[in-house]
Image (cartoon, rainbow, N blue to C red; front, top):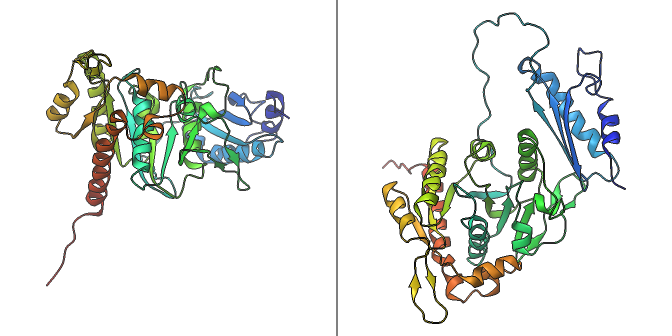
Length: 369
């Protein structure tokens, strides 16, 4: 039986913050409620000075909502969008609060962000086939679809089932072609838009990272949303990313945005594993002539200019598009084809980058004789 908004509000109306005489619903602190297929997202207003007691309310809200019949999981987030009702005394100078550092994902060895400066360059297709190429190299791999507004991983990976809730209130992600997959597209209808504000999006992403049983995995590939907005920046700052792969087509307008994405990751100290030039060339199936529809070599030139690895070029090929649309990615459905083989050297270079990043974090060995 599906839960409705009235039931959610009834549960939240039992929560009274410490020192208050009103529950959070009556006080107007519940600023957003979204629910779909047993997944609930709630936003609760607070102010910076009240974070400690409101954090207790946030945790209590999650636990109470998870107890409702038909709820698979619930996430509550704190927001600070309303001004304080009364003027506050001038605070004394004090040290800024310690911000938590980037967090890893339990049981996951490396987290790889596959990103692009703009949409439409084949980022998700690259992420899926990269994950499959890494899996073919005897790595245990998962893929997280971080594009809440435009999820495409379920269609590309041929996933039709929903994640299963475990006894400890975590989600067990479905697998396809040996890859663990998680996406908002598994929890909403394919043609249903997700109309959420930023805090709710970030809550959903955090939930898919930390409340999903990913491990044990060697590598989790994160298919990032396109662009350099709040979701991308927050993921890069709060998640202990091993490195980022930038995907672009060769033309100048796409590379301009790709460079913005590259510089965003550099500003938050995420290593750049390299750049992939997608739709690099087209080979006519009739005459065999190679055409450069979107120009050629721009990504490699950008990699050289910014001193990052050039991971490889992938052709503009109908079979890659068709197999992606049909949920049969080219690396899985036709691994010996030349188009699938284009992803193998990319995966090898990504693995080398992961190893190099791990070595840099470990530091040098010092021996005394």
